[in-house]
Image (tube, rainbow, N blue to C red):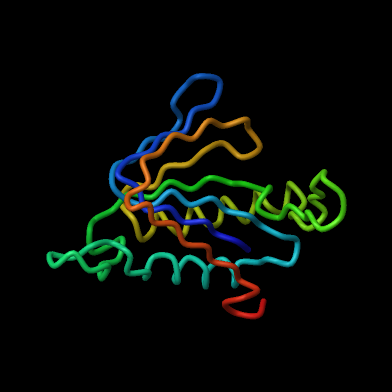
Length: 151
């Protein structure tokens, strides 16, 4: 599982020119799911993401977590995080999770995050989405379950 986390001042996601999600200060998280991922992997990734201290404190140090700043969360499914580009110039997505598996796990992640964060917005799984954001910093973190947990 891969999370690309962007610390944002605000963000929105649109489908067919209609805004389907919008947040203020918080995280936009692009989520890539593989076939080997499961709820245990998701729980570990969620915990790691929510406990990251990447917001500035009163001294300007990155020392505060999402919860400590009452931040919002936008979750976007993005299978292209599993693009395999080693051979040729056209990416292969063979390592991305099968749609049904990925959608079920994506929905699980949304449910778990809603238990911990007051404002969780999402895109629409499988849709052609347009994501607009103002990255604060910019500050972008990549979490990869293979690297973090050997999963």
